[in-house]
Amino acid sequence: MNKKFFAKTMFLALTGFFFSLHLKATVPYFSILSHHTEIILQDDYTVTYKVKKSTLILDKKGLGHGNILIPYSEIHRIMAFEGRLIDPSKGRVVKKISAKELSDYNNISKDALFDDQRVKFYGMGEEKLPMIVEVEYEVKQSGNFYFNSWYPLWYYNQKVEEATLEIRYPQALGLRYRKYHFDLAPDSSQFGDEISLSWKMKGLNPLAKEQENQAMYMKILPKKFSLEGFEADMSDWKNFGLWFAKLMVGKGEVTASLKEDIHRQVRGLERDTQKIEALYRYLQENYRYVYIGLGIDGWMPQNAAQVHQLKYGECKGLTNLMRSMLKEVGIDSQYTLVNAGVNEEDIDIEWSSNQFNHAILRVPLEDQTIWLECTSKTNPVGFLGEFTKNRHVLVITEDGGIIDKTPDYQEPAFNTFLTKNVIELKEDGNAHIEGEYIFKGNPSNNFLGLRTTMNGKDQKSFLNRNLGGSGLLIFDFYLEHHVENFVPTAKINFTGDLQKFAQNTSKRVLIPLNWKKISKEDLLNGKLYVHDIYEIHVSDKLEPENKLPQITDLNEEYSLKINTSWKEGVIRVEKHLETHFTCSETGNDLTALWQKVNVASIPSIVFKKIE
Image 1 (spheres, rainbow, N blue to C red):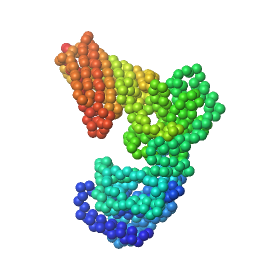
Image 2: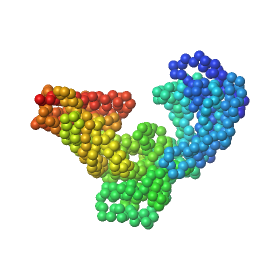
Image 3: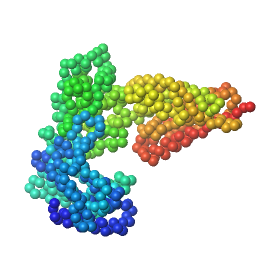
Image 4: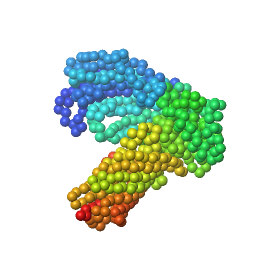
């Protein structure tokens, strides 16, 4: 190890140790970090990362800050490693950590069939504190398709004494970077064709978990790049898309047996929309999703013929197969990249780079564009759902990449549910119910895969929890799905009992106006259109004590109207709710709105008992 670096980190560590005795920071810290990262890009596009890190652990809450994690794969190879534990009070090495002592585990989800993304790991145990963890390692990356982002601060509740980054690269290949939450300009120099940039920070205060959006970091992006021999330019979306187009050359070939399957599915169909639906249904019924991430296969789709033979593929392979099948019947479609996930952020369209984790298919017709999620067994044709809706995407064409956006599904047709409930109230406050519920668009999501993912008993339990308020016990139900103009609809007819539907006293019965409450998930899209009808049959020994309530609540976020009437032992309640806030509402704002909508519907109808 470099003696100057060791002496410097020891001095900083001991300074932090004695300062910690009087630690009274606004945000407490459990460790003190000093680290240096060097990134070297070579003419042959290889990238070398050299990392030196010293962490002084002060508190057992910061033990995890000393853990060692080094990702590696076929593309990222660990070239050197040294680790040691040091007692700062004596300056003595307590333990040397060799590469053989690092654990090795898979870094991808359990759904992966093949994968080379792995992690070398060393976990801190019950070491006596304070303790210094020093690490030096070198990783070589075969291609500069992406660079690791730089984080001056590694953990929450951690103080940083010093953080430095140095990047060296050939001028001919170029480099881009984008800083977040800091403005520090780099020191720069040039020696011949090599450019050097460096950043140095000192004395960074700790952050708490709730300050996550203040964390400093920097994205490092290539201009010219290469991955396993495929060279291209990432400085704009058009050129970046051309690289993906190269990866797809020759991947769409279909075998004779696959051609037979394709034409069998569309036999007798005339309209393109019919053919798309038939082939999409064939894909869902005959192929399954698995993750495959070996080297460049993390970005290159499998051959259509290979997916056809194996009957499985990852998102790129399944999307490419669907594209090939449509091409066989004369329908053009485009392989499309997206950053998918319900809680994932949209891509930054101002910075062309690899910001994607998923592939879908775009099918442009004369009068509309159809989007296909080729990994889903349950999505109806043309409906992406929560996973990839309202996202900017990179569409891959022969002429390069173009930016488009997936539907946001804000129209009423995608955000409607209708319910009709016939309820027979019993003397003990329980009730019998017969219901017909129709969910259109986003609200249908919960019910699209019910048949294929759950058995009969679990289906009833799911419906008991999700069809209405508390106390529902379903006896029988019938579920049907259909799609109209690419809007999925789930229709559920059911019968069951409602436990403790009404509240009984010696002289009165309180009957709720709002048995089916709105969930937070119902509000996630910002738009919701609800029409609820209740026909509540009660005993002839009950009559309204007061005038039946009529509710009108109109504001900027929603409009609510509830009308009630009474005739010959039947209470009729009709509710219309429309929400119209922006779908950017999240967290506490969404919770407050959800509570507000339901509270506005809470009042009960009071009936008195007739002797």
